[in-house]
Structures are given as structure tokens and as C-alpha cells.
Length: 357
Length: 86
Image (cartoon, rainbow over all chains, first blue to last red; front, top):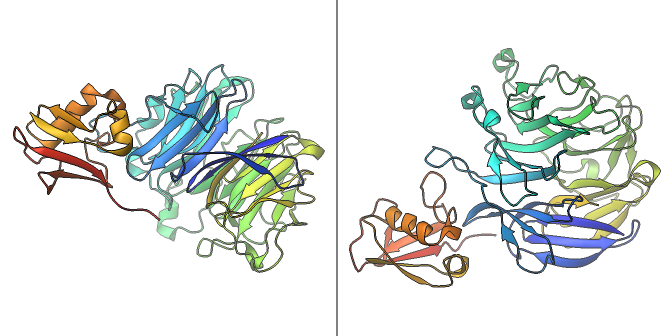
């Protein structure tokens, strides 16, 4: 049985089912509220959700019990009081390597840490006080910290991505940070801006290859990139078979560092699936070549938008399950590493995020 | 003392009561006083900057007010979420 946590514009949906078939909606929480992201900490079973009320601001809530019942508000999700900025949104929550540790990424470029399983949080000062922060430029979704890549077995190593402040790396548990943008080519910037090697690096999503943790894949604003040196430098690997260099979601097979998946969109000015066809593209050779995987997905008149956190996985290798949702409210899944697909749910509110387990 | 009136989830966070008699010279002082009395409201009306959240309206005796609006004893301050959304 696979569980899907689906954050939508109108609440959190918890679905259960078997790969290859429609899933059943088992619970809905935060009815009417935008749920940006939700996950379950597999170490404790705790559910955590990020909710950005248009009235009351961004919050993290958690529950150890029935998702239909009352959730607790987590403490500490705020920027320093008395400053000139307010927290706009929490984009993502990721479990850390140390017991009880979780990370949350938000706008404006804020990283929060919890060391008690998500009950209380504190702002990561090292990143917040980066001297270059005044020069950070937001992307269309704000200055969102959307990707948090831990290093299996080493709680001191983290790679994070901020749109459009690029990649940031730490090897001391977040006390100090350095950039990791070498090789990224922001062809969308005017020539004058290219002289600054860190300006406007609009990273859309990053995932680490768990069996080879120095390898990361990135969907960039223009291009798909791979790093083999823990995020320090990047090579464009999007040339071989992708229909466009634009998109947001990306997944990596945890069992195979050469296998990754992206869902391209037409372009930044036309953020829908190309040619009216919904297809996931797969590489099995670390990005040298990409092949479409669309068997069972809408093949015509389908102009879907899939957001960066609306793609998830469960299992591994041949039993790799892949799931993604669109702003159309459609949810699709594969139980055979993308070879075949089926419709998991339809007519949900616009899907912001999907987490499978 | 002025009276701060809250509704919906704010009422629940404020101990289940809609009306709160509080001391303060301005709207923001009253809202801070509400947070002191009911810490669960912290961050729900005012953001980290001490600014009333964008989609929350505050009325003082029926007139639209802001953080710095002066209040007097007996004034009635209504805290209302805007009718917005999509």
C-alpha cells in the first residue's frame, strides 16, 4: 500500500492505493486552505504540513494521530522580530540525517531547523546572515528555498537551492555556507548580467543520488544539469532527447545514480506540457540520453502544468513508483519506474506538492 | 481599556473569547497586548515586522485603522479577515 500526501490550493489530501490503479482519498485536512507541502517523517510517523493562509501567514502544523483531527502548530516558524522582512511561505520540509532533525525551506530564502521532530524550529543563522543576501534576487515564485538535499549518513553536509540565489553548500551542519553555481549557464539573463557568476541562478529543483551522494541532478530555469562533485560544479546534460530545456520537477532513482526523471514544459513563457502531450522523460545513463515515458498518460489536448514539488517517488529500481500531480487537479502514477502510467485521481484542487511513501 | 474583537480561528486561539479588554495607546499596542495575553495568536494578525497582515482589516469604532491608529478607553477594535480568495 502506498500513501500519497497531496498538498493543494484547497487543503491536504491523503490518498492510499496500489500502483497501477486509482487511489482512495482517506482524509482531507485544512479544508479551503493552501497547503504548500506535506510529508510524513518515516522515523516517527508524524505528519507535517506547511499551510500559507492568505489571511494569517505561513505556518507549519503537525499531528501524530488522525489527520482528520486537530493539528498542532509548530513553534518558531518566523523571521527575527523587528526586522524589515516577513516570512512569505514555507515551500518544503525534509528529514535530516540526525535523529529528530528536520529542515524547512521558505521564502525569503530562509532555512529552518528542528531538532525535536518538527514541534519547534529555529532559523538557520548561517544562511540568513549571508553577506551576499542583499543582492539575492527572487524568481517568479519569490525567493523560495525549495530544495534540501541531505547527505546519507552525514548530518553535517547539506545542499540547498534558492530561486534565484542558486545553490548553497555546507559541510559543517549549516554554520557556514558557500555557493555551488559553477557551470550553470543562465542564458535567460542579459549579457551584462552574465559577468556576475552568481547573479540570477534560477535553480528550479535539485535531487541527490543516494547511492552516489556526490552526484546531484538539477532542473535549471534553462537546462538539466548534473554535478559529480557534491554540487560545486555542474554540467548540462539536457541535450540528448528532451523536448525543451525548461521545467520544474525532477526525481532520481535511489537505487541507481544514473537514473533520473524530469517533466519538461514548453518554455518559461508557456509553462505547459509540450505538444499537448504529458510525458515523463527518463535517463538511464546519467543524462547522456533521455527517453519519453508516456504510456498511459494523456496523449493529446493535454496542456498541464506540473509544479516543482508535485513529483515524488516510493520504492526503488524496477519497483520504483513515481507520482505527479498537475495544477489541473489530475494525479498520475507509475509502479514500474515510468514504463506505464495510470490515473491516480482526478478533479482535485490545483496540486502544489506530492509526497509518496 | 479598549475592546478588541476577534472572530473565527482568531477567537479560538484567543481562549475561545471574542471580546478582549486590553490596554494600549495604538492599534499595534493593543494587538501586542492580545499576543501577550494569548500567545497562540502570535504571528496570526501581526507579522514579524509588526505589520498587520495584508488580508486582515482592523476597524476602530467602525473606521478603517492601521498599526499607528490611536485608541482611547472604550474604543472598539474589530479584527476582520478580508473577503478575498479564489
